[in-house]
Length: 466
Image (tube, rainbow, N blue to C red):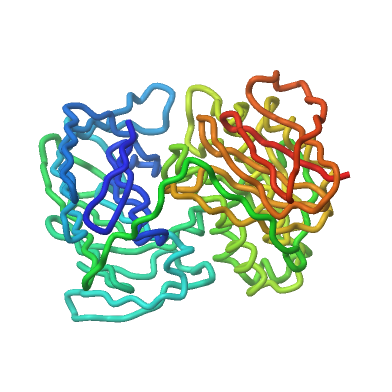
């Protein structure tokens, strides 16, 4: 169940017991707030919600619910059982308060349990922050390049940057990690409940609260709502081309984290390659989409400590790194195909030599096959203007083609503008056509450099001028 909510000048989404995409106008101030129950091998247990009640006012909201995180040991690498209750309040002045009280329902082992706040790297990289710690205030800057030590701040109760203050109260202090090391496009401030890790004892309850408060007087940004995304074809991106597309397993699953922590070895290598899994910490669909742009940041960071080395990304997939009883179904789905197309866009913007997808048979392979003729073609930017909380459509130009991707499971309307004159064809790749079938191109109407698109759920549409 997803709900879009407002707290004074801020808007956000509630889903799966989390707050996501807390924004002031088009600016994301906090990526997520969520409560994480991890296992002894760092797997994250998905909460099952009950007794959910959401109430709204003209300028705020209140949410209460119960949650259960449990996994049997059969077929998995760890077991856990933790019940918690959540209360989230959004107030007129933009203050958001997220409180959790919980306890294990049986003894089990875990590495970490507690509330977490994600800060999206596109918003905060290069920004200065101030922390409140036991030994007094200290300052720092969110690093633009991927930080080599995973944890770069510890034991603080409050973080301020720009006009936002995030504070923690209750049981446990904040520490902060650069999650780009594990393919997330975020920094994570996490609050650890004070258990005798790794062992938890049944009934040992703790409470934590995270407060997000805008600083100063802020007004809500009012925009005319539109169900149509506006796409505008832009200029060529300097030096960016669509990389070589490969499929199948390379047998390697090395994180960027390992390369980043052994930079001397990377400098001595003929080339640098790393795997890309976006779901190490969370694995909902939003996580899959929000993490793709980090591919560019990983490549930029690698070039700083190993300049001149060719870069390859291998084993690109939605597969979870923790054992599961069945294959990840999204790899073979239309959603996985749309995701693969967007990954290829950012791999091109990152300037990598090749991108290897290991998503098995299905829709992704069909999309990659359709995009193969564009390999080596120069990329063009496509700006996206949408009033949605997160843009539902993404696009990029490659040579004489424009690739448009519907990232959602529902139909989307879009207008594509500033197209060069000429005749255009389109290939529509969607779930209504069997995965092994390549649709034939059809002519489209382009008038005044513009065409309107009605995109099926998770459709990838390739428009080509001839």
